[in-house]
Length: 152
Image 1 (spheres, rainbow, N blue to C red):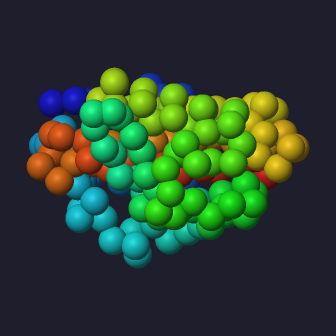
Image 2: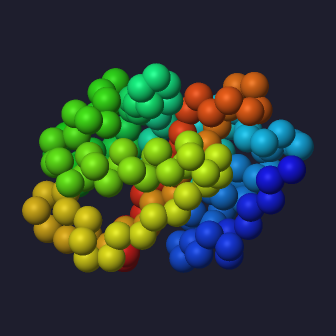
Image 3: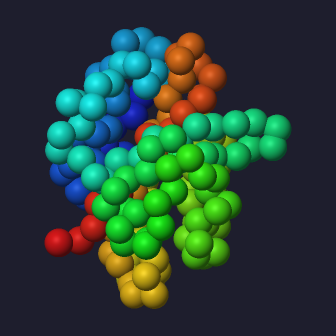
């Protein structure tokens, strides 16, 4: 069984540490939990900062099923139902694609920190992002859960 712990990922933000712990608690011996293992109520502490993405293969692509409203506001674009490649800022699109592809490649949660270099509205934003794999069958990653938090 895959063992993942927040300190090993270097997560700084307490809400992201909690999300990782919630993800682990719902694995129930499987490699990955399913989207059905969570309810919207479970994410009260991340409302507005959480996105769900469908994962499609051959070629590997990601489509926002739900785009975080706080992220949409900062980006100036609502991405629900759109592909990662449609993100207006090419640097942001490339970073998101790379981050999500790493989750698929490693078959594990990945934390990504952007210190003073993540540009959405042409201003730097310090943020930390956690992307978590989900699988209906516990094994084949078919969705990602991604949460952003920004420095206060």
